[in-house]
Image (cartoon, rainbow, N blue to C red):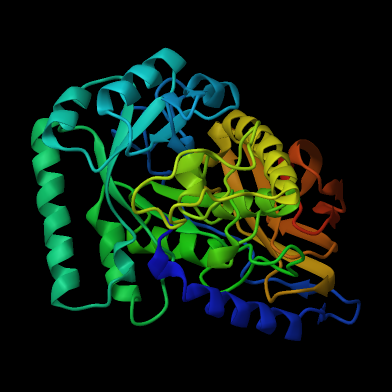
Length: 448
């Protein structure tokens, strides 16, 4: 997910940040009273059902509480003893992760055994045929990811050959294990000249997966930066015609060498909810902290970080010297770990919301206040069972008043999650949302 070829991206991030401050205090206007309709706020995808998988990677569309699976995962899970530290999947399961992407250092047998013991699902990266045979039909294997960040390639013969190699490998894997999902984890490079190739890669696998890491400054005014979570997630959904699961790899690390900083609690919540509102059907955090991440100049998250680890792997970006995290980064990492643990449980508890179709009811969103971006709030109205649930997220670091109008009169509200203050008033949902705030609201509407 991170490599030395990413280094030039830092300059791009700095340019994006500079652009943000130019429009950092754009007033939201105007109907004469300061209210503005946000045409881009409502997300209306998935009205025919939400594509997802069961726990073994088989495709599903309609939500079934017994079989529908929403992966809440983490990268670089380890099991065994390394540098005198005992690792395992059980602590990750206790932290609310139901999926682990095992690090490539591990044998497939060890990953599968650890997943079975901890009661989680495992994604095996770049499996050989023996690993696929071992995983075939195993209840704790979710998927195989094959190839990483292919859209960094420029279009051309080499890129086409890479697509052909993946297509052939997927066929070979499915010949051994016909049901398991096979996919690539891609970059967020949706700008020219990469877009067509990026869209092709989304269609290649059984899952459309990508990362987006927007946090490049501790005091960012907005997360709505170029190639950020919302637009990239929407592009992925569009690329597969809303017919395949979409797994968003979220930022849970710091690497100043690459221009990324550790998200804080509000930024992490906004990232996750922005992905969900734009159509993500799985959230995978990058990454669990260990010598693996440190060898890539990255400090991940975890409950008990060390300033440095003893193991330096051949070919690591640190050279022969262990990468050290300072006290402040460790503090922020532990805080983000606690936030992610809470989010894991919240997201899992609302699985029926994420995997239920979008309501066939239009809604209008208005905001008032000092916005930092053109569309500071994003919303999705879900038909959950026989009821309605409104999901809302702010991508700006600025408080806003909001009001949401449905075709039906809203009579009452029950808050399921989030920190926004909301009430039913005059048949509308009205309230205030803090910077990077979220809300999941169950609505009672008047019968037609």
